[in-house]
Length: 175
Image (cartoon, rainbow, N blue to C red):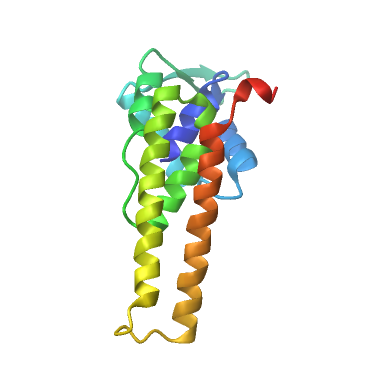
């Protein structure tokens, strides 16, 4: 999913790996902080797959720098990942939703609809499952387990409200 943030970051102009990491951390650090050890292999992989291009230069001091930039296939790849179905694992799902909402403005309208429908469907399932777990008299949940499940339900319900706001948001009215 870090791929989405890399493509989003490169959407404005070419950047070095360090600049990409710095911008992602600055903009999205509240929910993701990529390590250099994870980002650099990803950049190489994206270059090998021809999703992005790389320009290598030699500075006056003799240091090699790589600049990464989008190519004609970058947006197709972005679209493919953006509409990929969200995880059925609640914790993975939350991370995927945050990442996709962070790059929401780069997605086409039809891609946004696909993502929102998938997110709403999963959230409704998670809410129902969690409520059923609370209501299951045979589980014998203790106070702490019940508290955690209730908290998770509130997280899912709040996220559902925010996703619906994204669905109804008109960018032209917020410039």
